[in-house]
Image (cartoon, rainbow, N blue to C red):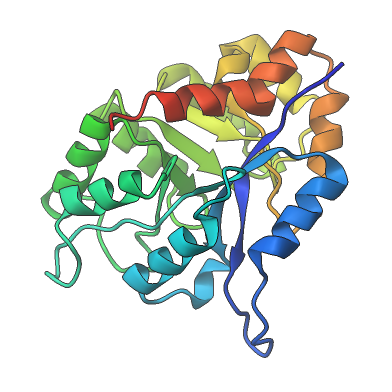
Length: 250
């Protein structure tokens, strides 16, 4: 059985407090090689040390350039303080640089999810069909549901869901057909993958790890040992993310 793996939840490149050494793209690629992950959608991690959005995105694009195994996932934010490029230009630049998705950080970057603050951004994202990574540390499940209802053709990918959230995740996935779930850290739920597949189908789950915060191997095992069909594993392993990226309006 061959399952291609495309990691939706990993990254490299940011220093941590007290440790100025950067995690390099080469280190990430070495980890991918060691466990058999073919490609990765990558962000600048850990994100808590990333303050300058344009600077961070530039270095992410530079590190990914020329390596098709690394697909950049830059940060976007509303230009509400007139300190960033207009929203549509942020997305044009991201797509021109090969981005497969973007990540939003409303808490860290101090902006509101209310329409009066961010509607231009999300309208542009929906027009482009550019998937959005929604971290549970940055958005509540209620926030994700509200965005899914306001922008019903915009793919929203939940990352960082934990084992306690299954009672919320299942009805959220049922109610919002444009919401997807990464099975990376901290999603370690006994038969959780099987339950999600039974409830909404395999097309709504995406393989992820959470590297460098966690080792990749554990989440690979979680997918490989799941009691679902090989075809469903292939969808989760890479097929679903490939489909979302192919849907981006370039």
